[in-house]
Image 1 (cartoon, rainbow, N blue to C red):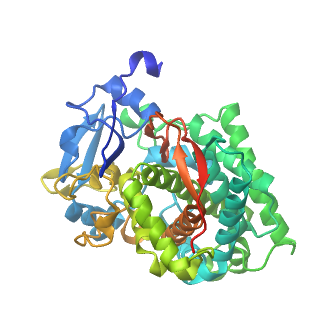
Image 2 (cartoon, one colour):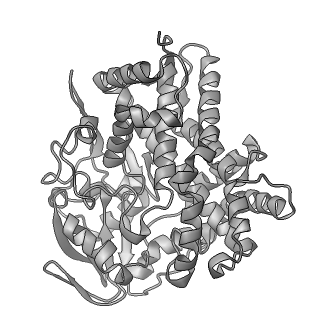
Amino acid sequence: MISRFYRRAAVIEERGEDYFIPAHPEPRAQSPGFMQVVLGARYSLIDNWISDHYRTCVDEFRILRRQVVLVNAPEHIKHVLVTCNSNYERKSPQMRRALAPLLGDGLFISDGETWKTRRPIVADIVHKRRMPEFAPVMEHAASALADAWAELPAGTEFDLTGEMAQLTAQIVARSVFGQQIGAAAAAQVVDGFSAYQGSVDSFNLGYFLGADAGWPLRLTRRRETAIRMVHSVVESAINAHLSGDGDAGSMIDLLIRRKGAAAADLDLTALRNEAATIFMAGHETTAATLTWVFYLVANAPWIERRLHAELAQVCGPRAPGLADLPRLPWCRAVIQEALRLYPPVPLLPRQALAPDTIAHVRVEKDALVMIAPWLLHRARDLWDRPNHFLPERFVSGPRMSAFAYIPFSVGPRICAGMNFGQDEAALCLAILAQRFRVVPREGYRVEPACRLTLRPANGLPVSVVARKAAA
C-alpha cells in the first residue's frame, strides 16, 4: 500500500573531497495531506516535515480533531521539558500504546508516582560512577567482535545494523543480567525487539478522532510472539537471580537488592518491565548510533584519518579502555555529531495535561506537543551547515545551548543511561576503528527511517579492512 499510494521523500546525500552531507529526506515544500500523514507514519516519522520546520519555531496544526503543537526553539523546549514539566510529563498516547504491551509500566513510558518512585533507583544503577564496573564487559565484547572480524575472508559482506545490534545486545545483556546469559538468549531478545518494532505503527486513528487514550493496540499473533521472545528471556534471568543463581553486581541484582527501597514495590512484573526497558534503551539506541557512526566516518576519510591518528597517539598498539576516553576528544566528538545528525529517538511527543500558552500558540488540554530532536538538530538558524557531518563543532566550535542539543532529551526525564550509552559507543568505536576500516557497499544508498527508533531502513551492507597495528 505504501509504495502505491505514498510518495516517499527523496533522500539527499552529497560528498566532495573535503565535505560530506549524509543521507536525509528532502524536506517537503508544503504540508502533506491527511493520507500522506497516515501512510507516512507507517513508513517513517521523519519524512513528512516541511522546510519551514527546519528552523526555530513554534507551530500548530490539526490532524482531524487533535491539536498538534510543534515546539522547535530552545527557550520553549525548556518551558515544556523543565519549567512546566509537570504539565507535559505524560508521553503521548501513541507512544504508550505502541510500547506498553512490551515494556508495561517501565520507566520510559511511566509517569506519576510510578515514575517518581522508580526513577532514582534506575538512575543510581546506571549512574556514570558505575562505569568502571560495566566497562570490562564493553571492552571484552568489542574486542571479541574485532577478533571475529579478523577471521573473515577478505571482502566478506554483512549487515552492519545487525552486527552492531548483536554487539550492544551482548553488552547490555551481560550488564543487566550478568555474565551467565548466553549469546543465543541475547540474540532472542534482539530478534524479539526487532520483530515487535516492525509490527507496530505510530499512527493511532482513534487518538486523532478524539479518543484521548487512543484505540488499544491489537495484539496480533506476530506481536504476541515477539513479546514472548523478550519476556521469556527476561523473566528467566530474573527468576535465576531471585533463586540465588545470578551474578552479583549486575543491574538486575542491584534492582532486586533495592526491592522495597524508597517504597518501590518491585514484584516480578515490575522487575521485568524495568529490565526490558533498560535493555531496549541500552541496546537499540547504541546499536543505531554505532551504525550511523561507521557510515559517517567511512564517507569522510579526512575525519577517519584524524580518528586513527588520535587512537595511535593515545593508545599505540594496545586496545583502548575506559581510562583513555578523556584523551580521545575526536572519538567522543564523532559520537556526539552522529547523535546530532541521527538522534536515536528523533521525536519526543508529550500530552498537555492542562491548557497552556507556548510563544504565540494557545495549547489545548490533551494537545499533542511535539519536540523533535530531528528538526532541532538541523535547524538552519541554530547550526552552521546543519546537514554536514562536522565533528569538529564538538571539539572547538561555539558551545550550544543545553536545549539546542537533546539526543537524550533534557530536564527531569533525561535518559538515565545517557553516560552509559555514550561511553559504550565511544569504547566500541575506539576498539573497532583501531583495528579496522568499515567500508559500505559501493553505490549503496542509505535511507534513514524511523518507526520507534531511527535506523537505516534496509540495513547497511559493509565489509571490513584490517589496519596495520600502530607502532
